Length: 438
Length: 200
Image 1 (cartoon, rainbow over the protein chains, first blue to last red):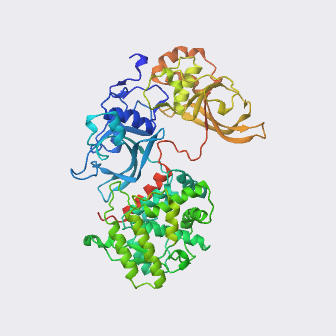
Image 2: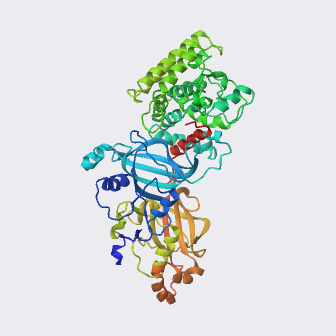
Image 3: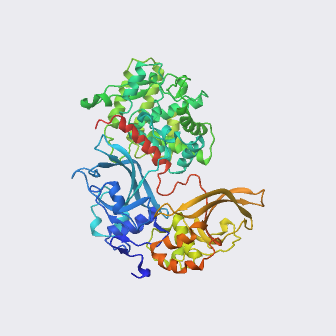
């Protein structure tokens, strides 16, 4: 074969001159490769192959999508997304050995400032849901925006939803910078950064800030988690009031799946700084009220544990903090970071960064409705209403009527925000914050 | 970006991103052995006096890294500074075995005059053919070039004369494109919460 043709694929083995790697940008993946794919245009070099995700395990994909003979860190392929159920919106990404599970929020991909598509991040779990074991295999799944497709190709795309059609994917193995976690309960923001230096933790949040509302995303994501994560812990706390075990981290995240509780978590952080008290990240159960389970009688053990903070301190937007200083310190580092951000905002430091942070934080209050992903949001409102009722009628925790009033008032605020969150953008954060402070 | 690939007809997405071994075996070795390099993408800057930020357009630039051949020299002084060896040497091992094919030296750029220059984030990887391996290497390098290498090997070219360099500005939080962003990592660890008890 003449050398000039070295870029033609031979026997499925792409011939790439030494030193060259297939390292496409996200833009190239979408604008060049995926667009050609969905338009049925020929792609010169058959570098991106079609893969049936249900048939190949990640380690098989690695073999199938080899380019040349040089070592690779990532592998690219086209995949056709099919619905899991004819009527549903979920994509079937199960293989023989495991399944791909979406994580995080989809990221918008821009090209020259124009939105062209989305990226979904997925993790491969070995085994069967819900007992899968998380692996290091990560997939980035890129899809074109519908309108992008429409303007550039015809016919085939008409009925396509984001959960169907061709996507281009990249898989790679996550490098493990972090040492193995000793306790799954410890797995939180704290842990993910625990092995980095303090400096890096700060940088992480700082740089996260510069991404579009990173914290907002985190809160939102955390808030989306099922309200089922802390029952055992909570039990534990109730039984051993003096046992400040280390696993109790990031209470706002723990609080359940509603944006409401996230908003509260935030207010707590704020209040602590405004009072000038020592930052204390252990939100103990004294502030939490156990609520009866809503539905799902078959899973009461894990779903009946909504935590609602109760206010006892008028200075704290109706919420209190515990002045309990003998806690683990690891946690504080991280929450202190967040607190510092909020505090800097509330103290009137109005840099660009600060206002960006404000956007992040305030929008978490209102951003609990998140229609994307496969996750379940159906009972947000129910939970919130129940929480409301319970919080205002429950009498097993001492608090004053005025605070109760403030409390439920605030609840309503959030409730309102929640119900109309789609119309409330984060473009007007100041307004939201001042509301919350009333 | 990619402008230097003019003689390489590759579709979008291909980038010059050689491994250390490729730099030594495919590029430096062939340069030293006076073999034609295909693709001939790495320019020869000889004893270049350029500051690292001047390399763009002169060296082969790809993905914020610059590649060029240079003559071996003891002190690399540029118009505005100098490259100071870190004193670290690393063996470059061939993929096909445990054979050492070359040596990688690390240098850091200092602005100003030695020895009181100001350290920068500019880093230079200088690849040398290892003396011991230079002859052995010529017969065992990549299969495609080994035949012609053998023929020329008796010439006993001066292996110490040339080095190939990779220059880049170190960026602490750049983990490479194939890695997860910090944000993704956070999301991932939040996923672990699911694993504690997931009823559905």
